[in-house]
Image (cartoon, rainbow, N blue to C red):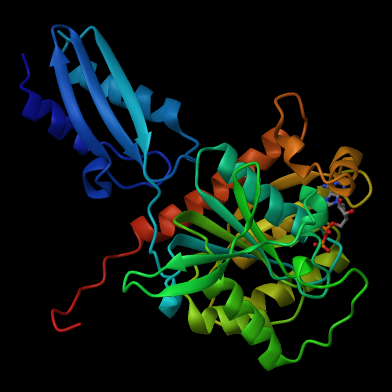
Length: 355
Ligand code: ADP
């Protein structure tokens, strides 16, 4: 009979099918127990949005049975703890991963993707916040069907000081804050750079977000102002660029990517939205390949998305029978895995003791 230590070693040396490094390096193996012919293996995933559970089970089961033919059954049990850099800057923001969602121009479905990314990650079991920073057209309150103004709450700091914070709106367990809650309907505001900077930092700093696995930020289209503020004040996990498949729209997406490069925000990848007969299919995918940027999936054009967005019921896109559920969850998984890969595959930096 092969010893437990040998079984552990066999599993540690297997490669994770999504990330491409072995379970030992990724510190994903949390336990191996044998009881007669049955071996139980505990794997801790780097995010609940991990798409390859069956492949992991299959690979572990085959390797264990091969190393010890006396094993009759292998049970792989999964848990998940979101990995993240927890880089909330000096704001005391406790978000493991901050994700910006941007686009080269308006109307491509950026807010739809940002909102469904947030609901999707929530559906998959993560703690999620959604910050609508699209000051020029804050559409998130409308899409989630919650236009009430958030309340102010008093909270105690660690040092015993009482301070006032903004209580985010809760929508199906998702914490949401939007510029739309603070503007009167039809109110136009001229947002100059310093004002934008102040508004965004206040949202990050003064909102009672609690602990989050992912904070999704819906950026205004095109402009780099807010992106610059974010890159200077936080360590973002990266940006998701949304575009539609036709050539003219792709030109704007390339500009958005170039803007993120300039402000040093890593681009996690491109999402193609409104795929279908009207705008075509595959344009964003080939552009992503050309630019060596990950392609994060496509969301087909579907009147149901527009109707639910207008009715404030966008979360219902995740109901079991909805045709958009599958492509949306696929996008969520791809985004989460890009972040995990960035964290776990990037070579470890040597640390200096004095820092
Ligand atoms: P943006 O944030 O880029 O301005 P929105 O997310 O507000 O874009 O979307 C613009 C409009 O397109 C909204 O009415 C929205 O419901 C609709 N829409 C977005 N994605 C789709 C889709 N895949 N199919 C159908 N309608 C969509």
